[in-house]
Figure 1: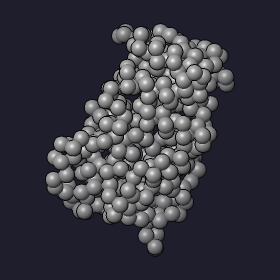
Figure 2: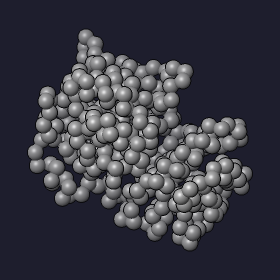
Figure 3: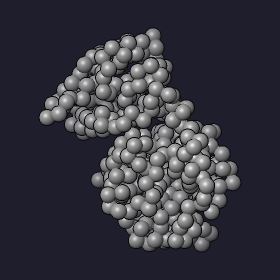
Amino acid sequence: MGAKVRVLIVDDSAFFRNRVAAALQSAQDMEIIGFAANGDEAIRQTKSLKPDVVTMDVEMPVIDGITAVRRIMAETPTRILMFSAVTTEGAKETLDALDAGAMDFLPKEMSNPVAGAEETSKALLERVRNLAKSPLTLSRASVKEYLTPSPSRVASVGQTAPTFSSSPEMVAIGASTGGPVALRQVLSALPRNYPLPVVAAVHMPGSFTRAYAERLDGSCAIKVKEAMDREMLQPGVALIAPGGKQTTVVRGAGGYQVRISNPLPGEIYHPSVDQMLASVAESYRGKALALILTGMGSDGLEGAKKLKKYGSSLWSQDQKSCVVYGMPQAVEKAGLSDKVLSIDEIGPLMARVK
């Protein structure tokens, strides 16, 4: 067995620290190297112990989790997994933490082993393992620099408009781990008069997507909102698939619209990128552009196959700029990617679509 994943656990609750430790210690590839009860201790312990991954609570005394993340990323860049409350306020705090440099989050109710669920421990282990293998995309430079495309890179990709067998009439985007930050970077590169509608499915809890869409709307030139059932697709408007629901695109007499439905028993992802892309394939045939961004697993692969069958185009994010190179890797390995691009290339190139 290779080197163990060294984890620092940060939470002001001794009970929760112990439960997280118990979940991680159930795996042979994990090593708990320390505990911290507040943000100040977290900053000092991260600097001295240099963990592979830090699990971090948001609400803590002395220094809160968000401030601690910002300090850690400025002084000792480290992979950070946030625990968040599944509430509207929890969503806003989690988005603040991602903006500050956290690489992933896990709703605290899901991860709290009070219920003793094996699935919660499994989810935590999977997140920590994936982060430990991920490149540290948010470097010492700062989150702002990460979210700002490199001028030289933008210039090089923005010289000419991309070519397609047939001009796309919409853009469909799928993402998971690392997706909230990546999608914001893509959408913020689009001009206010962007000629295509956008539909995006990111794996997030239902209580998060509205707050996320509102935040995107405030930082992007295009209009961004959480999708509503039977809402029409419109140029220059990005619809974010609601968490906890399935979102598909259908063609009606008045144009294209999204349909929102409850997930069926056994469906792992909701929103499902596969379902969204498959519906786009059926409704738009060969006239869509799909983007597969950073994310764990392979959701989107089956939908991408249908898209390509009908002649649509697909771009995927490259390994170097992904937080987790799962979803993009799946479509690239299957030979479905027309372009493999860095996250700071995708938005500017997408903005050139005519």
